[in-house]
Amino acid sequence: MPSKSLDYSMNLTRQRAEEVFDRVLKYSTADETEATVSSSSYALTRFANNTIHQNVAEENSWLSVRLVSEGRLARASTNKFDEASIRQLCENALALAKLQAPDPTLLPMPGPQTYRALDRFYNETAQLTPQTRAETVAQVVERAEKDGLTAAGVFASGASAFGLFNSRGMKAYHEETMSEFSVTMMGNSSSGWAKKTAPYWMELEPLELAERAAQKALASSEPREIEPGRYTVILEPSAMLDLLGFMIFDFSGQAVNEQRSCFTGRVGQKVFGDNISLRDDVFHPLQTGAPYDGEGIPRQRVPIVEKGEVKNLVYARQTAHKLGVQPTGHGFPLPNEYAEAPMNIVMDGDRSSVDDMIKSTEHGLLVTRFWYIREVDPYKKILTGMTRDGTFWIEDGQVKQGVRNLRFNQSLVDMLNNVEMMSPPQRTAGEESFEMVVPAAKIREFNFASTTKY
Image (cartoon, rainbow, N blue to C red; front, side, top):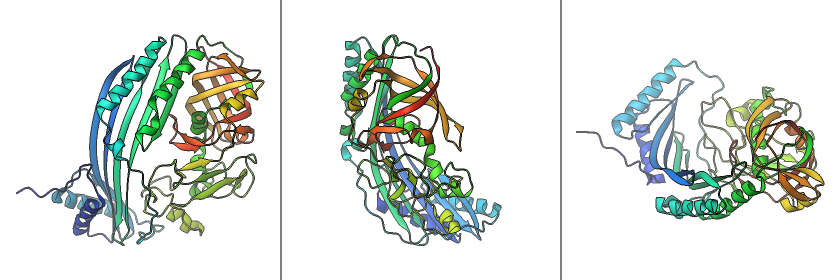
């Protein structure tokens, strides 16, 4: 008879995850055993040329087992949950471990932990139907056609659940939902873009995003070319986010210790302007994610930058042990090459609106977002990239017209010393980095190196 299989559909619960782990323990003969049991569902409606051209949905579950045997570490994964497959998975992981060299820095797995509950699961998002997504897209297309624009974008939603358990008694479990709406409106000579993500899909406000993208496309039509140079810029939150994302791994304790970070030798020093403060805060109401890291260590709020001073770094268990500090709950699942990073960034803002910033600007540029960003100098944190989907010339406190896209070469350290005004922070999505809570900002002396022809 075939071996009995556990139910691993999106009905994964803490109890079912623990049942899977019990079977892992049944077949693991390693000194220490850890298991991640995960399940997800994801549905997407994609549209282009004012027509839906793709609607897909998938469900997936997987089991990842990390074993430690005589100081040797290995991990193996499967998406099969029957007894024979779980037994084979444990045997494979143990065989892999025996092929590894002993790791003298490897710590014992953590024991039981206490977590603060985070409620980020919404049935309305988990049960969002293709019909609702299609009807929403139809309204967005109608808005595009009203002004002769062409709409393209994505409306997606999903749910995930994941448990993390080990043989020392640690038990962690979290579930959440996520939704995304992204739209680009294209005219003959211009485009506009808007995007938002949220655990509760009704917060997306797709029609408002479509209107914003349409207005940007219309306002930036027939863009003119301007000379490259240093300009005052107003970066909308998505533009800020995609730049800040390139600095996140520099706040790693391991990166600083190995002198790979732009903050090497600068922790405890003032690096940015007085108005720059950043923290990592998974508990912020606009954030998402689990209250524990890849090893099950509770995440802590960490003030990273306070009034321009690099105040603290984040630490995984192994980095913390090596440096004689406490772990902050920011490690990735082992084994990995990155150690740790702050993944729930919140940047303090101020009370100014984007309109306030525009009115205060004699000459400058308004930037919707960047794309194709690349790092030029990791220690000076110089990035290059291009503006996209709505770049505007500001004159005498008013947006005058669209301009052709520009390529920038800019140090993030210098940029964060030149911030003059900020808006209240908001949950923000981009294309080059993960979601953060960040403000829009007015920045002086932003360096544009060259122009483009579109």
